[in-house]
Image (cartoon, rainbow, N blue to C red; front, side):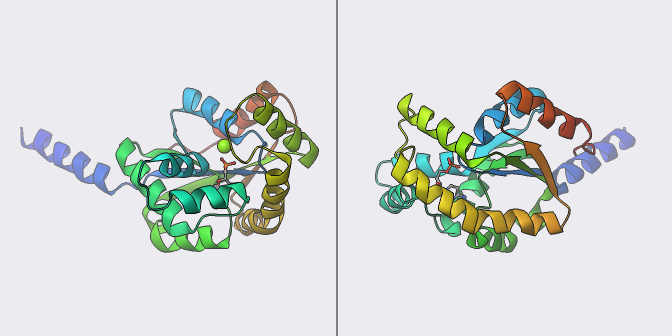
Length: 212
Ligand code: C5P
Ligand code: MG
């Protein structure tokens, strides 16, 4: 009886102190981050939080204080201040009740990285950074097709794409290099078909240390 009570208390304390596992998912616009995250969710049970989706959701909320700022920033391919993005991520993590997260499209620049390191880094267990490495030409074509196919996104057009790639090369690549120096980056060749890319992703997940 006491043993059972004790083990119940112990597992409660453990579950409330274990840090959630986080995988960051980075890559150029159109590299296939969202598509592969859906596959990972199905096969490996992570919760997918796309920073871009969270920002678009916030922008669409009636009366959102940040709606205009977010829309203008997205259309210009720039990066929204981290205070907004990090809070949206933190709220979504809490709301999900999960302890395994794929955080897609974040951290995208130094402001994102610094904000995360200030606010969140010590409360999570960063497993690795999944980097979808894909030639720019392939990425641009995918985004233009997505736009033509009615993605409804205000940034899947040639003008916004040029700015998004500029931001990616100048602001996001240094973040990937930062994590490379920490030996945390898992490269995926993302130029192939979704099935081919998922084979490479699976190999990474299957070699991963067990989650909490
Ligand atoms: O990742 P996704 O392509 O959906 O992001 C769309 C846009 O959302 C980005 O080009 C950027 O303007 C904005 N964004 C941001 N900060 C992030 C992720 C996305 O400002 N961390
Ligand atoms: Mg996406």
